[in-house]
Length: 238
Image (cartoon, rainbow, N blue to C red):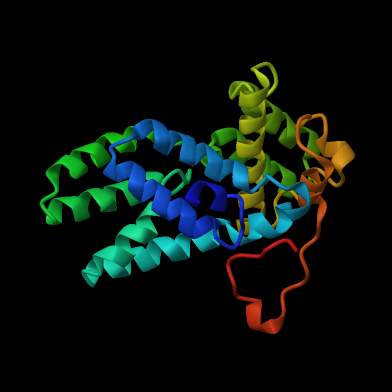
C-alpha cells in the first residue's frame, strides 16, 4: 500500500517517509537508492501536473522541512525530527545534512548499528547540479542577456552528465536533474532563465526527452511582487 501511495500526490510525502524509515530499519541501501530515484521522478510523472508539483517541492519547501526538523531535534522530539530528516533523504541539497542529523539522533539513542549505516549513507549523496559551475555561469550570463553563451554552459553540463548519449533511463534522469536545477536557480535568483527558453520549441534541442508541458515552465513570467512581498528574497514563477 505504501508503494502504491507514492503515486498519489495526497499521500506521497507520508508514504515516502515511511518507506525510507523502513529501508533504514532493514539496512537496505539498494531500496533506499530506488526510493531516491522514485522521488526525483515523481515531479515529472504527470507532465500536466509538473508546474504544481515542482512549485510544491522546491527549495523553499525543503528548507522549511529541514529547519522544522532541526527545531524538533533540539527539542528532543525525536519522532518529528526523524520524519522531517527522512523526508529530505535523496534531495540533492539536503541529503548529507539530513543524514548527518539522523546519525546524531541514532548516536544519542545509542543505536550504534543504525548510526554506522547512516554514516555510510552519506556516500550515496546525489550530485547537486544547481551548484555546478556551468549552471551557475549560465544563470548569470542569461541575466546579462548573453543567451547563446548561457545555453552553451547548459549544454556542457548536460553533456558532462551523459544526458544525450547514454541509455534512455539515464538520459531522462539527467535531463530531469539539470532542468529541475535550472528551475530552482530560476525561482531563487531573479528568474535567471526567463528569456533563456521562451517556448518548448526553444528548449527541445537541450532537453529532447522531456514533454512540452514540462519544457514550458521556464518561459512563464512571474507576476510583479505585491507590496507585501517586495522584500521577499525568493520570487516564484507561476
